Length: 295
Length: 76
Image 1 (cartoon, each protein chain N blue to C red):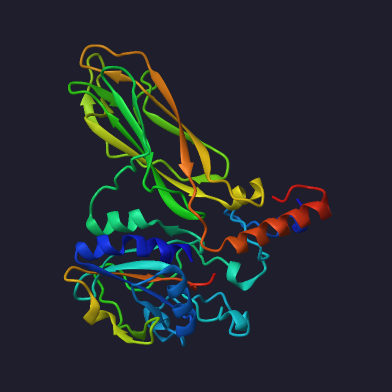
Image 2 (cartoon, rainbow over the protein chains, first blue to last red):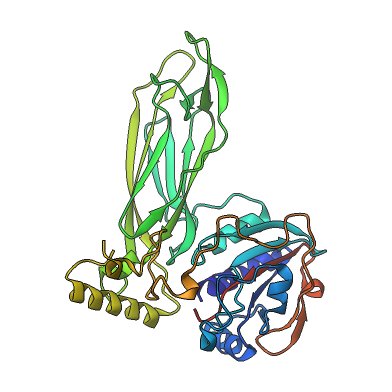
């Protein structure tokens, strides 16, 4: 499973920072041993085969009846999620998603543990809009993975003595926006830092603005639509990003500007590619049968 | 849209080759129970690992703590 392989990828960084990592499921030891050998997993994959620990945490999936999927051991699975604990087993943070297929990426786990900002991966696009403003657009990981939530990060450097208008500014100002488009991806809501109120000449009310370096962060997830591009999964996909803003100093405003960048996002090699060819085959069969695209 | 066309996509737009009626595709309520909250101590975890060695998580934590991930299965 892709998530376990990603966790193996950050294991050394976590240990250097003084944290260990554990994974728990109701898989029998033999299944975990086979997976660990195949994918070189060296952190503990713990077998809670009778779901005693999963029940003690109170996170057993209550939607599956005891008689369902017995050969697959469906009954007794946990709602997937992550706890961050201190050295005394006290929860300091946790991460659960309502949708069973969604999970946080390796770099976001690392950023959360280390309490630091996620670094933009080095394949980022850096655009000098003018001599005054620089925008860097990139991803939180070197690759995107199917149904794993990564972040699209947009860093904007606003020169000293200048400001950009934030959401909530009066209509006559163009507030800063980020728009993201692309096939085979699902985009979440843009999250912005807190703005600061500013008195602007000629206006009585305070206007929300940004100054200095700001970051917009947008959850980005590759969906199974990428499979529909054909039986072979593409190596990459393209995401187009438009950043619009208006920069002012205390006396005058520059015209509103938009910059557009296209990111070429590499897709991770899938851990279970056979499973996905089966998806593609089934979709194709269904489409042939109904004569309509499956959606 | 007929049920035949739509049985593999859930309300979140997620596609899986298992029909929506399958048990594993049921979604919990938005406020489903997610176990111990921030500030609470988690239950003891003493379980065999992939090599069959019994691991006590409380005794195997790093000096700053650990990340404990619950997943559905290594296989699916």
